[in-house]
Length: 115
Image 1 (cartoon, rainbow, N blue to C red):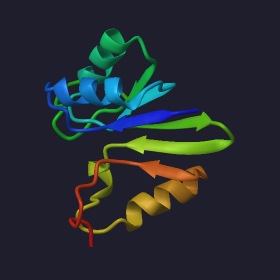
Image 2: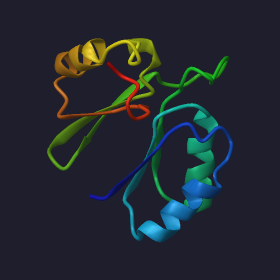
Image 3: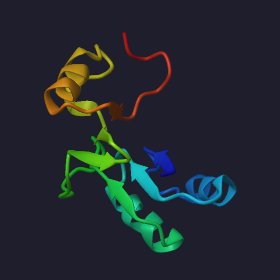
């Protein structure tokens, strides 16, 4: 199973669509929030299944804050991360992953910002 992961597209899908095209065959796209609707748009434009969650900029939108996805004997937690205060520490996010018994946590995280 081949995954492509995106987040924080904020309505700008050009790079995401280019990445899908250049990456070859993918089985599933994951969108870790900020512009939840972009996940639906990616599904429409690529024909691929997409799982997405809402982020801190998705004010007023209904959608899941987190998803546990089972694939190829692995459990993934997909979340934007804002509810776990990831810029202060990853401890709450790690704890949530352990509680849900996932193998992999996927969230928005910009390099060097977490302590």
